[in-house]
Length: 598
Image (cartoon, rainbow, N blue to C red; front, side):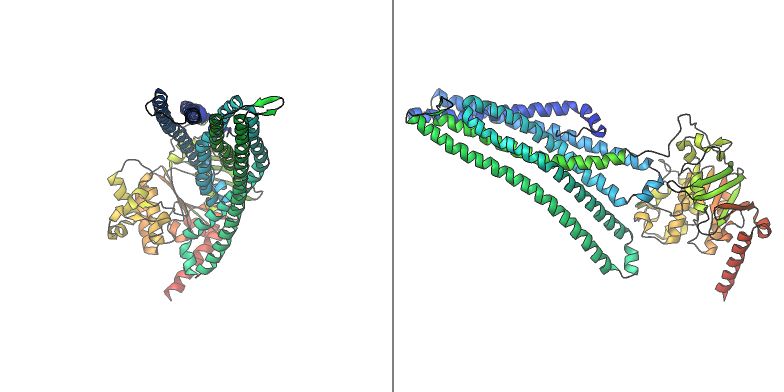
């Protein structure tokens, strides 16, 4: 019953089976030797009762001391061993599961991250994994100790005195019934607690990420009040779970100590009746028990207290672990939609791209974002992509990098269908600077050289110069070793864009895709970057998505998108007369420049 047996953990039971076996054997050994202690104490009571004193020089006392020392040493070594083995195995399983989750997160497509909150994933990888690890470690201990120590102690108790043993068995029966009724309630309350934690994690992460916006709009108090409300709900959910958990444990301990009092009362009476020569008869059998036997019996029962409490706690831990495992298993069982076909091939891209009646609809949507686009991009071409907001510019380049699956026979690289090219091979041939220009927390150098495990000084300097960011970096105290905050929070928007651009330059792939990467720089810097780009990317394909037509006026050809359709694909000069959208964008930009001059 109390075993996590899902496919994502059972494979690790076999891998770490030797540690679990050693842990179980050491636990059982400790339990066996632990139950010798009541027998030693009972023997001493009998010796004292029979002789009125204990001779400290007698063989009996010497062997009692030696026996006690042996038991202490064995129990010490056994407890050290089960801690090393069981906790090591549980920590390793947690490590493997966390690695599985990280790799799974890398394989999932962008649609998942559009629908799922970051706080949820953080909660799965922290609270839920720790809950599972706790159960695999402490839970395994409690299950084994609870079962074996209970069995051994009850066996000895029945052998010693079956009448008192029947009384001692009552709490175990009551605990089992109580556990059966509480397990489902506790599982449900733990699920609600974890979901509440998800909400708290997500709100906190979102606020820290957007702290500058909150401060700019002076919304600190509003966010504090919202956080207080979420935190209060989280507290209430935790209190409800803790209440049922504590109630469960308290009732178990009440049952145990009530039975202990009953055993002590009945046992004392049985001893008194035996001493006075009038033993109590139950079912026609006299109950003969001495003081030493009663002390031994009580020792067995008190040895049962821990496993009975442990079995109760196992219910709580199992309820939590089962719920947490299901949440993680649901994540690990998500289907990987962006993956290689079985017959996919490795193909080194040269730079030729063909779109053949290409259309695209986002997953879980019925609306076509791009419709019937056909065009040919030749190796070495610099291609601009323009259009109104929402026309499908970023979607087009995202599909070229296969961030989404596309229909077969709709996109070709060098006459090879994109769906037949291995993902690693495809993306290795594309340098992509996305619209959000995400930067990692770390040094500028680490961000720019992200694509390469070995540092190339010449490529690095060329990337800095080409993206026109070298002079900015040279002004920083630690130059390229300057550490920037997550997502470039400590640098300007223009610097962030140019560092992201330098990262794409450094990779130096046959195809370079730039998604609106110069929108935050001034016109002079833009001109410098585009001039460097032309020189650097000679004989290599470059695709530039732009919000300003000036960015692509020197491109070989420009793709003009209008509401997801290809309005035109031609040279900038020809588009002035053939594309209404393009000519209007050029006119609007000229008017904005003139307005700026005034």
